Image 1: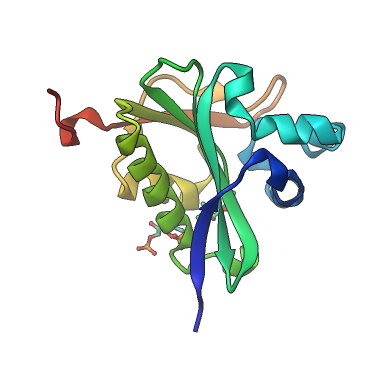
Image 2: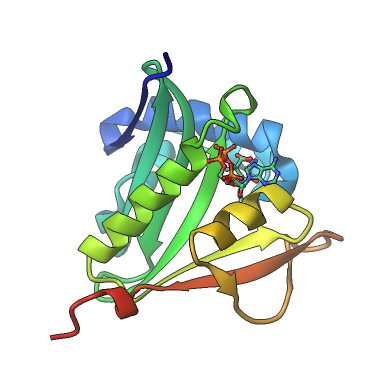
Length: 174
Ligand SMILES: CC(C)(COP(=O)(O)OP(=O)(O)OC[C@H]1O[C@@H](n2cnc3c(N)ncnc32)[C@H](O)[C@@H]1OP(=O)(O)O)[C@@H](O)C(=O)NCCC(=O)NCCS
């Protein structure tokens, strides 16, 4: 039986993060604005700092998914300032060997619940328009298109669709 678990990483876990992130960029280069080459250039301190949101004036968390105790996926949610109530989801990836098991759905649900717990009002993300699997996942969890298409990265022919999830409707507004 498959045992699926999720956990938040701290900066001490940077090696796990680095391994997953480089795997994701190697596997799915058209899903992310960053490139494998740009991330391979990071040094150890920079990998560790990536997980230390507060030193960068942000508020956030990076969760990994584990299948039978093996790290097989990741996603993070951050606000761009400590006081912002707008969260942004980045770096979502599940290893090909673990896809179709509901882990992406579980990971995204966990992030949404984290954001609600932090009293965020919205979650934003951007998904490449040709990425049917991710689009369906985001739509299934209530995200809707929000604004014009944006190129994936400078010079890319690929376009991303910005999406938004409103969280405040389900929260106590008092
Ligand atoms: C998108 C991704 C995270 C989905 O992860 P996953 O664990 O395979 O997804 P799940 O098994 O939880 O599926 C959840 C829902 O997503 C959608 N979905 C997932 N894979 C799909 C596919 N191949 N085709 C169509 N819909 C798909 C479905 O709505 C599915 O719900 P259902 O099974 O009830 O139909 C994964 O395919 C991935 O990592 N892709 C490469 C990286 C990427 O594109 N990241 C997103 C960047 S914005």
